[in-house]
Image (cartoon, rainbow, N blue to C red; front, side):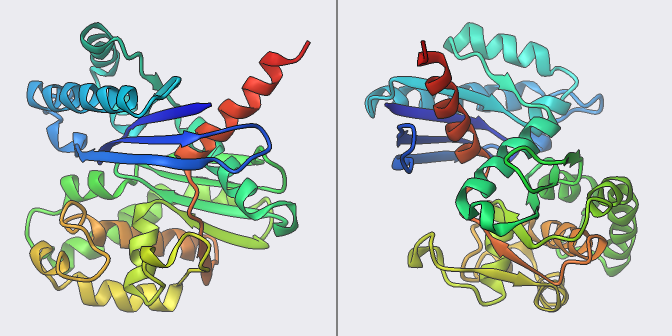
Length: 313
C-alpha cells in the first residue's frame, strides 16, 4: 500500500510517502516539506492570523497534489501543537477541510508522545529495555518512558523550540540575561512531567527524536545525514553544554553557516538546545542516542497495525 502521512506541525507542512505492509519495513518513496512556523502567526489572543491560515492552506493543497502524483492510496493527515494550542484551531480545521477536502486529525500531546514512542520501540526492539524518549518540536516537547510499545507515561509540555524563540528572544543573538531567565523557566515547566517520567525508573536506553536533536548531535560531532539512518549517533550532555556556549553568541545568519543547520531552523536552535539540555539534566541523562524514526513513522506503523486488525475475520 502506498501511504502518505501529511504532518501539519509548528515548523513545517511535511508529506512523507511510503510503501507499507504489515511485517515489513516502511519504504520511503517521497519526502516533501515546506516551511510554516505557525507560532509566528499567532495574534495577541493566540489565534492563527489570516496570513498564517493562507500559508497553511497553500501548504496543504500542495502536499495533497504531490500525494496524488506519487500514487498514494491513502492520505493520513495529522496536526500537532500549533493547531492544538491555537485559539481558533477548530475553525482552521474546518476551513482546511472546506477548501481542500483534507480533514486534519489533531493529535493530543499524549497521543503525539505515544506514537513517537511506538516508532522508537519498533526501531530498537524489546532488547532495549526501558526507553526514555525526548522529542523537541516547534511548539512542544514530548517525553515518554516505558518497557512496552505503549509507554507507561507520555507527557507533552509547551516547550517547543520555535515557540520559545518567538516568546523570549527579541535580539539576535539573544542576551545572556534572557538565556538565564529562559533556563529557569524551562526548568520550572519541566519539573512535573520530568518527575513523573523519573519515578518510572532509569532508562536502559535514552533516546532523542526530531530534527532538533539530529541537528544538535551533528553540531557536536555525529555523522551527517548522508551517512544513512543506521549509523549510530549520540548527543552527550557535556558536548551540548559546550555547544550552547558557542551558538548562543552567534547570530541566526552565522548559525545557518554551520554544517547541519538549515536556514529555516537556525533562529530556533538555541532555544531547542536549552530545552534539550534541561530535559537531559532533569532526567539525569548524560548521553542519548538519536533515533531516525519519530512521529510520522509511528503514525505509519499504527495505520499498518490497524489495517491488519480491520482485515481479520
